[in-house]
Length: 450
Image (cartoon, rainbow, N blue to C red; front, top):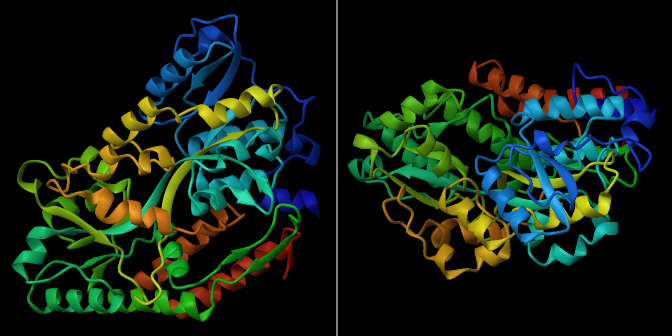
């Protein structure tokens, strides 16, 4: 049964060979480290060399900073692909029992996928508590399962509402503080011939899950200490209220249904086709890199706190972020854990990360620094976005329990949101179907549902 559970966590199309292959251990061979293959030259060749896979745009700078500051341990950096490409390569190594790096960069919501395969090391045995105080409660919960800790946080995505100041000014709209006000603003735009209020993308269901959690939903409950026991609650009243709300916005033509992270969506955002972008703290960097905020689009963006379902009980949620995890195949776990704890943790690297808009750091040394707090964000025309919006959201975030099914859950939710956008299902019906599909899938894979 456990082998079927392990196979389930990656998703459709992936076969996990055996428990022994997934488990790793000191006797397993990690990826061999050839100093000549490192993308950042290693000059302290007498030091222990820890292999790291990462795709941060400024990863080379971060590794250079680490290597310069450490004499006993050096990092050998490899870009094994971004996101899904790296995960596929890592899964191959997990299945084969060899070929994984010592340390791997993972997006936060993929940590349970590999932790339940025993592919990651519980860092409580390697001094995770030493750095726990560097992070907020929510950031630490995101990398924990029960008493185990499977990664060291680096960056996150506290959610907020970016909006077009030109559109809001033209139509006399003030930033909505509730989702009822958000709908009312969208109705006003539609009645007066304005642009869409926002967008419900099928291809990125993660923010929709976050909004369900904002309303009090708890879709997944499990503990890695009991990996075959799972509670699934995707169609509770809190979740249905959220998805019915967004389905209603789609049906009434208040928001669009364009897939995000596409050239069409970016072109629409730059052209002012959407009054708002419900996103995360990394979004300004993403949009800037895609050409937004330049030329005729310059000076048109601002950010406000995420609208609330209940202003008496405000809830902050997160979309995105990444961590350093130590793989079970590493033969030098103590050195690897040191790298996980100290890579992208020095002031120079963290400062470079936020100034270049590469990351929104979760380390308290930056979140509490006056320079970061008072930074006037160029993309937002000098607004102190960190102080006004993102830092309060990050500090209030209480953490999440992510799906252990990896791509399977998101792929199925994508189909359900697409059905809503095509007018085939209500929000409630889509969630009832999603719940049934996930329960069936979990049972088939050997999970015991609670």
